[in-house]
Length: 137
Image (cartoon, rainbow, N blue to C red; front, side, top):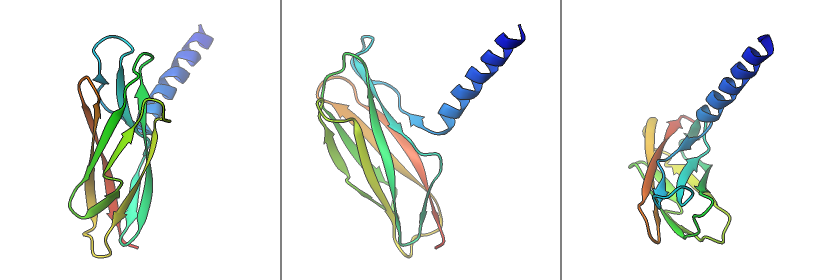
């Protein structure tokens, strides 16, 4: 019994840690099981110093049967620059994209949002946003 309780606690802890270290969008694409995709932003705490840039990893989690291209559109809040602002992730490509998020030297300190929209060739799009904190150098 004690072992069962420990195993359940470890699984719960792993699930909570997984949620803290990444953000996942709602499912887009097809409606059938395994025909959709999600956008995953693997950031725990994105901080960018004024006048500097930071890299942020974006990934598509494809369902087993989802074999379509997805166009990612990236729109930052005013005060941030993001490159690229649009990227096509082909069905045959690796599902990983690196974003470069930069803050101007005179950017106001505080939190900013970056909005991502993933639109497949066919099916419904999905969106997600993540927060970037601009800090002093």
